[in-house]
Length: 175
Image (cartoon, rainbow, N blue to C red; front, top):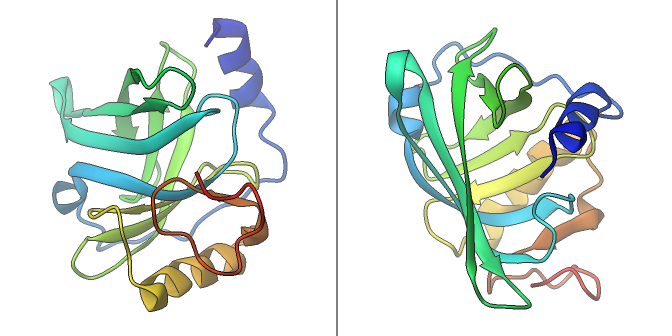
């Protein structure tokens, strides 16, 4: 990822999405490893399968972020590292892959056990459905999809990155 691409992506997100604040969001419970169940395709994850994210305590009150996956062409593992800071609400983070330029990371939904989450990247171009386990039950997935649709996302465009793929997914949406 070039610095120019990062700046352009950060400045020109497309139609903005603002998720409601969750005053009771517990960042401590959110830390740990998450599996990507589905995402909207984006340039920085293009061609990745079995995508995961890990959030840990960082330095000076930050959150250490590791995002990774396996390149579908080579089978090699790719990882990127970042730092995040809480923004205007406990469930809103600013993620810095390069200094000064950040991406929005807003948790729009998390279940009571902190095992499933819906994350908005601040625009209709960036969405992730995450879970602690790479497989989710169909009714749990539907709850996550409903949250995404309520925010204005076109869930028919989702790419499912693990073995689980719902029947309504189109050709090419399951990886």
